[in-house]
Length: 134
Image 1 (cartoon, one colour):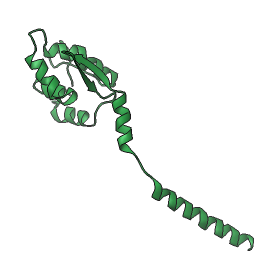
Image 2 (cartoon, helix red, strand yellow; image 1 turned 90 degrees about the vertical axis):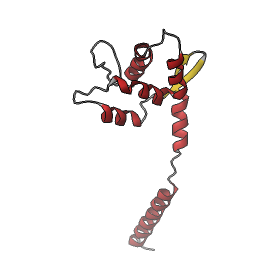
Image 3 (cartoon, one colour; image 1 turned 30 degrees about the vertical axis):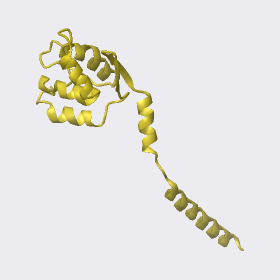
Image 4 (cartoon, helix red, strand yellow; image 1 turned 120 degrees about the vertical axis):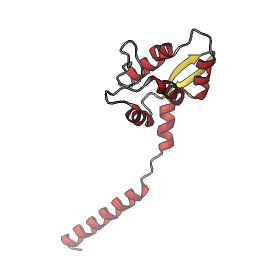
């Protein structure tokens, strides 16, 4: 086999190896999601543990963009929906059924504000007095 034939054979073998590697590409997205779960932010309330992802969920920026006004503010009427989507219906029900010391302002100040800050997202209350998702 001359040099040109060797080069041709090597090129063909390389192309074949690349093609086989492409076929073998397997992405275990379940593993990636499990890794995210293992890094969850934990919120303890009423003796239960609720978990938030360590990075903003995919739906959140879409939700904010869909529900913000021309000033980039999400109305307080969507506050419970954000809380429910982030922490679950169980948490949302618990804050509605809790005693008078649990308010949306408290949830916003003690949970949403630090979590959004951890995610690198800005929060501004539409009244300018407090902090809620925007």
